[in-house]
Amino acid sequence: MSLADTLNFSKNGGLVTVVAQDAATGAVLMVAHADREAIERTEATGEMHYRSRTRGLWHKGATSGNVQRVVSLEPDCDADAVLARVAPAGPACHTGTTSCFAETAVAADVLSSVDATIQARAATRADAGERPTYTQRLLADRNLRLKKLGEESAELVTACADGDAARATEEAADLFYHALVALRALGVGLDEVRAALAARR
Image (cartoon, rainbow, N blue to C red; front, side, top):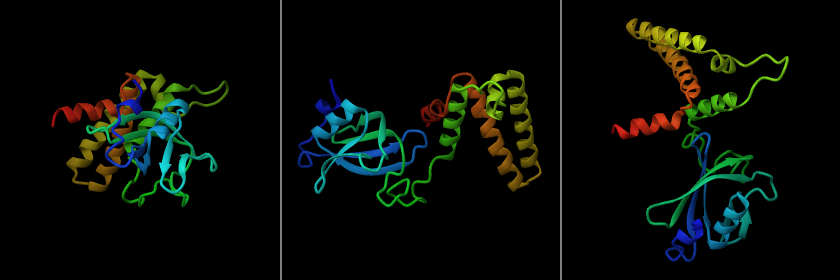
């Protein structure tokens, strides 16, 4: 069954609300509306289409090139709103900014961005004669990976024991990065960690 067949278009004059979210960073990019035709075009093409009261049916990025490739489409519990997780090819806002919301309100989740970069490094290898990135070196060398994870853990413990907040913050950032690399080597990403934390609430 298509998404269009599961949505309730009757509540808002034939429209549902669509929240577009960057699938890699978690940042909210924009909020728009879609009717059945827009949802069907989105599903058929794999790129976001919306319905505007003034512009009618429109394909996001058709003129600017800033298309939004669909990663997933999830209806809410009332079936009158859709969370569209997308891979944007450029800014979402007509003003040229990444998001239609204030940057301070939707600052990209840095950990998600780091995790996405690590995942990309895991999926590619350095070309012949090209020096691998540090992340690729860690992913390829189990002993180096675990050694660095242990070192960063010890350095964070020491900074906390010394009461050095600035150093502890830096060491925590190092530890988070190395932990994400170690997890990615096991095929685990930040989403799985979030799910594990959510299950404990």
